Length: 249
Image (cartoon, rainbow, N blue to C red; front, side, top):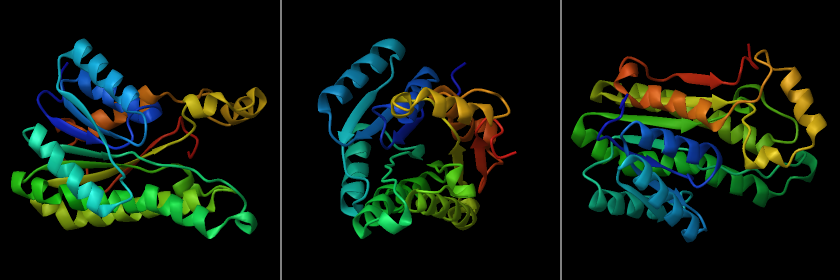
């Protein structure tokens, strides 16, 4: 079922983990994919070829720094030169610099804020003219359960993700009259390359506290993104969808 046939999506940070899962599922649903990466041009090229050969959609990666407004505006210009338009924006790029507040440096705070929160402002603003021209658009911002509940040792990350929720609600109210929707997704414990390096006992303890008794997968998050990007959710805006196995219930 091609729920996103011929739509074009711009995804930040899509060469691994949740971002790659979203790109793959959107391609499967018929969407053309523009995605960003920070470092590996070879990996980006492999993703382009893989998704194109599997699903026959247009796919292109762009090296870009989402923390820079100037770079974000240039990125959108490049995407619009290569694709007919942008229908969906997924602000997925994010980093962690975890440590207790007592030990946290100003640099660790600023870096997380710039990549996680300022990037959402940058890309949303850069895409806004296109969405207004189209009188349509779906913006999906990747927050986290720790943006709702907080977490010791992640004051910077939690604050950045909480900020995304406030930004999402405000943008939804500003742009709803223009048929532009803005929602957030708050993943819980998602099994990716990053979590694979964790101690088995730590993972088991986390999973034991999740009502569904398993970690999530990038596909679980990607499926929620498909819903929010597609016409199935045309009356949904300003919401934060928790994809966490009931962790926050």
